[in-house]
Length: 140
Image 1 (cartoon, helix red, strand yellow):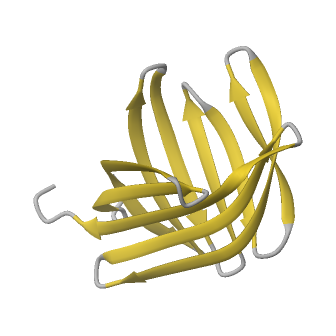
Image 2 (cartoon, one colour):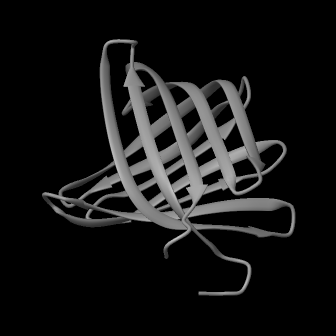
C-alpha cells in the first residue's frame, strides 16, 4: 500500500427508480493523486471477483469495473456520455446522463453521490441513485 492510501470501510448503496435498492459493504482504499480522488474496492460476485475504481475530480467522475464484469461508466453533469459494459458473451454500449454529482471528503470520511439516467444498448434502464459512503478504518 502506498503512503497516501488510506484503508477505508465502504458502503455502496444503489437505488433504481426509487424502487429497488442494493447495498454492499466492503473494505478498500482511498487515495488522492493530482486533482483526482480515487476509491478502490473488490467485491465477490457469483461470476467471480470484480475490482472497482471510482475516480472523482471537480468536473467529472468515472467508474471502472474489471474482472468478472468489465464496465466503464463516465459522468459529467447534464451531459450524455458513452460507456461500455462487457459480459463474457457480449459487449454492450451504454450511456449515462448525470443529474446530480457530489464528492466530499473530510477528516477520514467521504461521500460520492451520483444520480443518473442509464441506458444499455439504446434501452433506458432507469434512473440510478448511487451513494458511496466511506470512512477510515482504525483497525486495518
